[in-house]
Image (cartoon, rainbow, N blue to C red):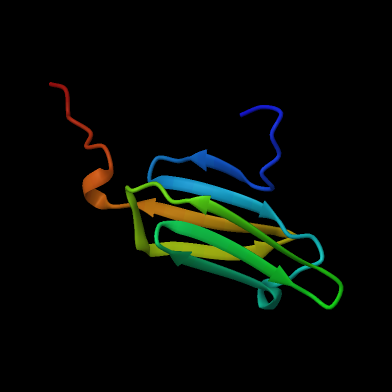
Length: 93
């Protein structure tokens, strides 16, 4: 939604979703990503500051296949959908 700043960006991919959260000044040891009751929470703590962001997880995401990395001040979270939830491509003959 334009005009709102949630502190993260979500984009849909062929296999699920990509979430990007700016975490300038933080590294992977300062960032914690938790999933509980369908809510994905990002907490970051350093000596100078803390912040937290949360978002509701789509039901089609496989919680066992969530990955997160911090690269150049950006936390990148990959949310893969359950295989059954992914579209099946039908060959046209």
